[in-house]
Image (cartoon, rainbow over all chains, first blue to last red; front, side, top):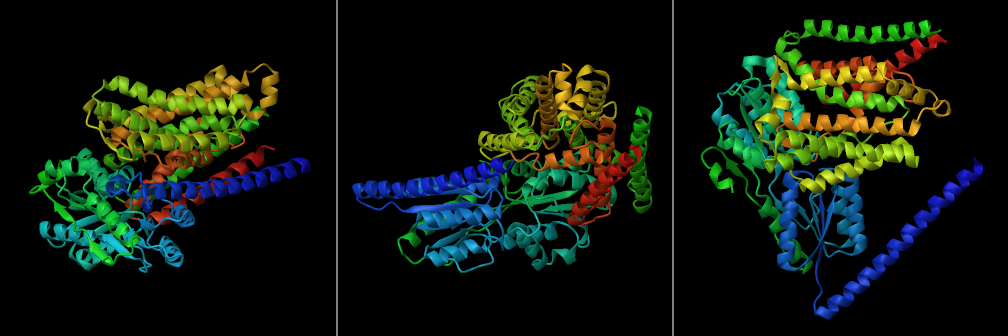
Amino acid sequence: MKKRMVGTIFAVLLAAAMTVGCSGGADGKDSKTEKKSDSGSGKDKITVGVTMKDNSDEFVKRIANAIEAEGKKEDVKILMNDAQGDVNKQVSDVENMIAQGVDVIILNAQDMEGSSPCVTQAKEAGIPLIVCNTDVSNTDYTGFVGCTDQESGEMLAKWFMDNLPKGSNVCIIEGPMGQAGQVGRMEGFKSAGMLDYFNVLATQTANWKRDEAMTLAEDWVTTYGDKLNAIICENDDMAMGALSACKAAGRDDIVIGGVDGIDDALEAVKNGETGVSIVQDAEGQGTTAVEMAVKAAKGEEIPYDTRIPFKECTSDNVDEFLK
Amino acid sequence: MTQKKDIGKIVRDFGLAAVVLLIIIVMSFLSESFLTTNNITNILRQISINGVLAVGMTFVVLTGGIDLSVGSLVAVTSVICGSLLEGEMNTFLVCIIGVAAAMAFGLLNGYLVSYVGFQPFIATLATMTIGRGFAMVYADGKPYIIKDPSFIFIGQGKIAGIPTLVVILLVICMLGIIILNTTTFGRYIFAIGGNKNAARLSGVKTKKIEMLVYLLSGFCCGIVGLMLSARISSGQPTAGEGYELDAIAAVAIGGTSMNGGIGSLRGTILGFLILGLLSNSMNLMNIDSFYQNIVKGIIIILAVFLDMKTKGKQD
């Protein structure tokens, strides 16, 4: 027993030592060979470290793709990291990128508070950092590219207030509590005055998930019955879940709307099944973030706050969005 | 002795059934929409997904194993079906391929556990991450839109007034009970969970049985993959995240010992019924999802406590 434990500890230590040794060695080699090849080509290729909050999210993935594409166009090296929805991984990703000596970092924050250390670390290491798409509470970064979640919340709220009578009964489906998207969009609902304008029957989170939103909507349709006029969703995936539930219950009178402009949401708007989708310009955000990052890496001045405007997609203009 | 054991089991299941009844009675007073046909159909539809996974999980847990990969395997089936349906393949064929893919992962689980000798927790942890990664890569992180009406029928249609999802759940539960209680395969599962060495020495092909159990769990994941994708009309790489925990919770509440050998599908069925009823009740009463998590955890503690007490009586 004792022997086995000693053996295990030894093995773990050995493995750890090997990992450290190898990664150190590999890094050293890497940077050397890179410098060589760079000096060979005559100029230093800028390395842009990117940390995305969760590439399994369709919308985030679109920004990531735009970043990769723009990186190729600008001829810079993109180091793409995916935090997979884990703020802890995002912080370590940034630590690793700083250790690797990237020239500039693009941060797509997983958590408004939790991702703040990323900003501090980059600042301390003297590496410019561009925040892309999501809000982060530590604003000590080089520049921001995107649109705030609050704006999308406000736009969604305004559309519903314009299209439904005052005092209508609504339910709200939120994103994961505490995530920038949820906090900001809820803030937008508040600042637009929507929470007072309507009679809010229920507010629950479905964690951006379609199946969870569907379950909620099913339960609400039964509980509130004909009283329920609208389901307001903080993203489109959840709006699609709510739509399926309403369709199954034969309730085409319930007005549904969301944010993001994913493919089936646009189609639902076109078919008149949902009222609105607030569309973020994913490509615009990714492309502009890389442009700003490259400028910052070269030491040029960049604007602190670059806004990529939202677009409201309704039955009037849906064809523009359907490519 | 066996009679006493049976009495203990019956007392326990009676306790669970009483909990189910209690929730129903309390809720029918608290919410007037609770006992409507619509809501009952909702509850049944909502438990069907976790129910099918929990049936598969029960088999695995009875052998003393665990299957953490179920949520990821659901996603594997989901994206494969989504992509094949976008290519307008024959619906039936799509279902077969989708379920087969999840079963292939189940087979890998079984092989690693029984023939290579991995701990079930580690083996299925590995396939859980591989499966999720595979689904992400395969779908490039994006969901597929499913439009095929005959496929969607699985998730949104009705057979003789009963939602197809519920019919599938009933069939799987019945098949599970038949396999577990009337076949030699079922008896061997209990034998392996009770004492693997004794089972092997008395001539049971333990490796083969264990492998089949994980294959069976994979099959259930595949079926759930079809059910979920059809329910939400999309093939999603993020589908089924965290489902393994709900399935394990249902099994634990149902009184199946995590060490294997003791338990029943009857208990598991009551387990996922309780979980589904609770979640629906709390949604109807608009209770914050954070509290819902706390309640779920307390129920698991109470159920296992009840389990220990009734088992204590046997001795």
